[in-house]
Image 1 (cartoon, rainbow over the protein chains, first blue to last red):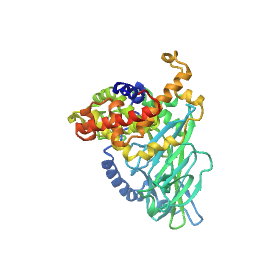
Image 2: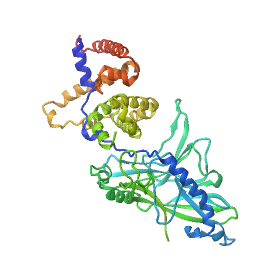
Image 3: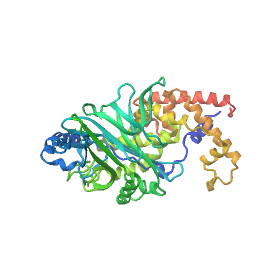
Length: 297
Length: 179
């Protein structure tokens, strides 16, 4: 075989055609400034308990008396944070890409089904809280954690079939499972161990939405309104009920809603007002985000 | 490098990088993921890219690093869906493109099978030979660019490509390719 012939064979085998569409960069950009934002937000969260005692009691809505009394209403308000930012009624906390926050959507083989998975990082702040239970009305929680280091103290399994692009089991080189993944409708964590570095908690689900994938990843750059609408329809009224159990036996809950939201980069916390984001967009650039907010009465 | 320059870079070099990613992972879907991850890493370092003489070499060295770190993840997909029937195979390989109308399905199968045979042989080469071959043929890089990308001297690149070709030639001849 001549060198020229080998060259020809290798070119044919190793240089297939690539379409223009395939080289588009589709994933969202990781936000470099998350550390700064998280640090600032942790400050907000730390202050939240103090603020709550002087009147943010309106934040929580549905006291579940456990027999003793409902006096705990005003004595034990609590605040929920998502990605260290306080959740408030009517004010959306966006899901951008960072250390503890991320999201993914993928299309099914039928071209109409869309699966979503959104990392959550909910925490409760308040006085005299013993444990917290989260339950979801649609879809499921996908919990991925070290097999021997669980933070979940109680749980109800999700009984449906889930095909979402969720986080699966992680195996070591020998095939031993080092991180387990499971789908739950409800889980409980203790107040003092609400999270750890090895645990990820997401909400996930799927919906048949013909044409939605084209809107999300379409060529048009200014379709953020449509994309946010698709996100909203995809989540379709997902509500996460957060119930705190106080040390005195009473409990209280708040409802977190998930949906789509149009925000500027500055509003989303990706950069400060007047600054330019890493990819060149200015702070006023609008985009569609998944977001969480507290349900208002 | 600003946004427009980055977009231009993707247009100019995206195909070479994606082709390299697909060849390296030996699976289109995993290759697409590796390509997207590479571009994301590049975007994170966008502000520093101006001073670099060869962004393409840098991008490909990122791909190689990411692939080494995440080899298991990228290769896992290949075990999930093997081609199970000729019908699926035909669908997957898009027989009905107009420019291919003059070829029969049998010819397509033969050609595709030859391509896959050669790809499999290259994939079995030791990494130090395989990567330079992919960089040369899939990413269309010159010897000096490969040297820059792999941080090795040009003479070493030449030696590795020469040895890779000797090995491939022997194996191809052994399975009946023309001598």
